[in-house]
Length: 283
Length: 292
Ligand SMILES: Nc1ncnc2c1ncn2[C@@H]1O[C@H](COP(=O)(O)OP(=O)(O)O)[C@@H](O)[C@H]1O
Ligand SMILES: [Mg+2]
Image (cartoon, rainbow over all chains, first blue to last red; front, top):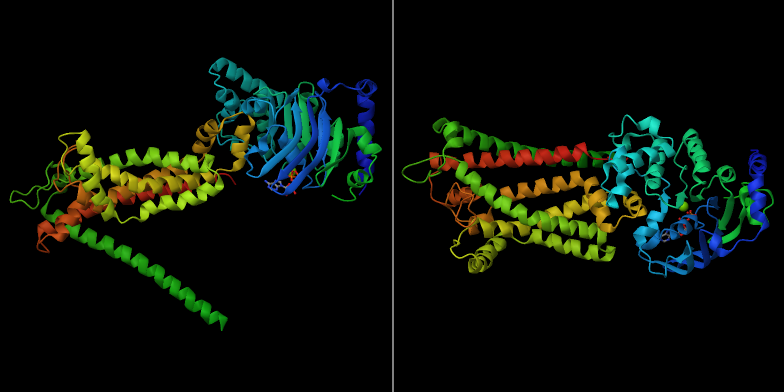
């Protein structure tokens, strides 16, 4: 399979597309305050097992960061650190700093509900509530105690428009969300997250359960969304990482092997293992 | 060789199944025949509308309503006790309790259902009633309130256990979606998990009602043996089941009209529990595999 050249072609196209912004970015080194998320010396354990080892990484706002690596390398674990979704696991333990918006979310006094409003999440398998389409999108507002019907209506509409689902469902807002197709369900789940007005959106293999057309729609969406949100996406699809992301981080067995601009990771990876992985030699 | 063995086992299983079915048919048949004989002498109209039930007196009246009201009054009290407690336990166990704790507490709760009902009956009569009498003066020694409360305690595990199963069958992905948008545990439980498990919860409630309606020992011991059309929980009443016990244990001659009254009461009881069980079955089937 001509996997490598395909991916590289994508990168070249992207390179020319993004050039003005990218060069700007690379010139001056950034201060920590300019990053949305920073992890320092992060270790994560499940009981005795260490799932992440000394991860140091900084994530820029208004960009798409892709986490790649073979399955079991800790991508989901890492992603779920950012909204403290691992807290419910009995023997989960964390060491090091995780800083979101200049706040250490594990040591400082923060409200976990507020953190999760700011750091939204989209899951691997579409997981709409067994409620109507409307109620799915309105859910986040309702739990915040919003009563203003007009406001809720507008928010539902605008969120569904953002994910280009509005035209498909506007006449069926009272229909059960489980009746939608998988791709529609996933876009609904994104709309549901957007309705809460997060700043960061975490996506854990959001298209792995979807057909190519639905996948394409969601990838397109990412281009629009990154103007307003910071997006971190886990994907096992190299071409998807190449297409949608600005930055890429490669994980292997709990280690962050390499991270940097997507163009650079995919064209001149500095680590042999990264190269092997993105060229499809293992994984 | 293996083939014959399997055939034998298969036949044996079929035989066991047939016995069960035949027994059920037999019971229903006896009930129906005896009830039919009863209704040749007492009109269905009188049975359903007369407000007194005095088949053992010289002036006989055959209105089932007093027995029905006794049954429903005790059952309603039982559900009023068991539903909030059972549901709270179910939500706590499935949404809050650590796994270890749940594994320990659930079997102990189910022990409640293993206590012989005669023990509950005496507990109601000798502990609950005297205690309630100190709070409510004028309460009779036999009453539907204590019987209902104790019956409610007995059926708590039906609601808590089956509801907890239903709650735990709700996929974790829905909880995660809810937490992920900033919901608290309580919001997630009441806005996502409970609604998603509602069919299973309703089934547990119906089965609990069915169990309460059919419960015999507790009401026979603690609620009294005075058929009375009333909604007053402080006075003696008699339930359908308690009446059946009373006549079965008494010296009423077989094949008499008095004796057949228990089949009339029995078939009334059977119709109610049959309907309730079918509703729960129907709900279970209708909402099964909603998430696949
Ligand atoms: N709840 C858990 N308890 C114990 N080990 C876990 C748990 N979740 C994940 N792991 C382990 O942590 C490692 C990383 O898992 P994960 O982050 O899901 O990997 P990825 O998303 O990259 O496939 C795997 O070896 C996995 O088996
Ligand atoms: Mg994963």
